[in-house]
Image (cartoon, rainbow, N blue to C red; front, side, top):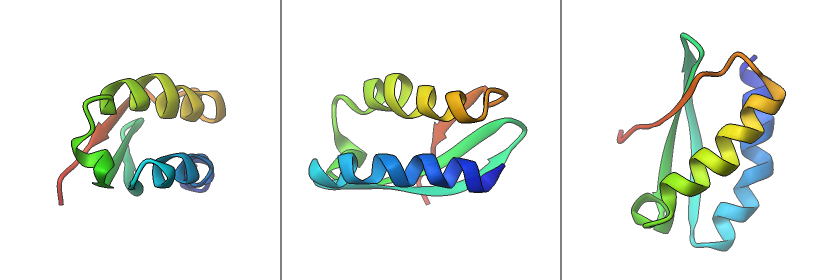
Length: 74
């Protein structure tokens, strides 16, 4: 399961990098994916839109049981 999630994140990474940011997988627990955003992505005003309409949908296409995507600050 985590490998599929990491594959999707790797596909999104170039997009995030092109906007001055990055994304890191933290953990998968109870059908929730936890990630960390760094660089400009961590303070982007479009962060929620990118995550919900882009990354979450891409993750759910590969792993339908994913319920939620949560950004954590480590």
